[in-house]
Image (tube, rainbow, N blue to C red; front, side, top):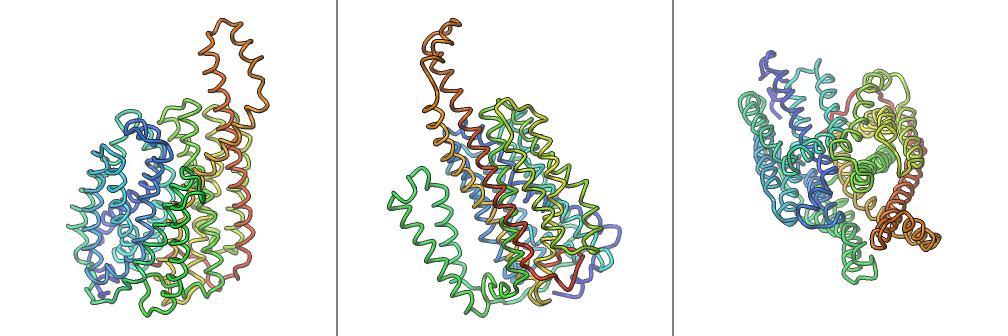
Length: 509
């Protein structure tokens, strides 16, 4: 990296804030797209004639593509320059967003979402890197604070924005809205960021490692997405894909440990603090994200919530996070980060346990208040944990650690989405069978018939009642499972040694 790029001296002080806001906006847009489609899945499914399970591919395809491409960031930025890659990725993200918005088939939409994920993978770390280059050293904590806010706000505001656009316009606008934002970022970025362009270098790339990464992650995601509809391991295709993923994963690890320039530097896992923190980050983020997947669908499909209300309910988590963020920033340099992480994860576990009390007659505030309370603890989990992972490695390993951290956080999102929806669906079918077994249909039918309902309507009413109760019970079971995972993660963090360094913002990538 050139001296100009590293010092931020290339951009006039009067323009630094504008450049920083544009970079933060770009990262916010990428993070937002992880969750903006969550509340819109029922509408997309109805419009395209697909099932809700197939609709989950719209979420997972984006996350998987992003996770696979994040490790390439260092190589591609060094080869072509950070600013060039940022602007090129923004152009690609805008084009793919437009293609998502005009999609008329599931295949076209998923392919366009994969494109979004590929370009978004480069935008996230590039926005962080360029923010550090825009501002002088004394303002970099502020810059990373701005970047961290987008990381917190994006997942929580996605459902609210997606719900509003879906209900008042159409689901297409959840993607088309990215186009003017991308154009703004391209124009301003081209005008302001060129003075901090980094030097181009000829760097080796681990093509074998990349191919193995695509192989095992891709096969794993297909197994998770299609397994339930193919009776899991009763289907030879699922068995073959699972074996391929497992073998590919093992070969990938062996290859990366012996490669001089690995696509994912697994050597940083030798640090116990990093490996433990990374495991906790993956589990905690997966447990936190699970609620964003199932709750909006349950609210719309079974409780009759409009998309806007479902999205607004999810956004209460962001409001809680904004309240506690300054407090967390204050405490990070004064307390053991393990205490903050453990308390934050335990807090999220408690709110998951709270949501096991939900019933079929729950109103908007009954569902929204736990979301808000959850948000109060999210910053205690996320900010110290991200910092802890990077403060437990050597200085020259921070970039590799940050890359692996981003990869695991994103892949945890994709895997959590697939597993949560599969578990919810499987538990729903079991709960329905149990409900049918204890139900006395003759008495219920006679009671409803006595009120003047025709036989066909009576049968439909009973079926809907059973489905609603079964779906709600499945949701409760999902939160019981989430609670257990989060409690385990809250305890696991104490296996990490207390870092010698505390405080500060994650500066890697």
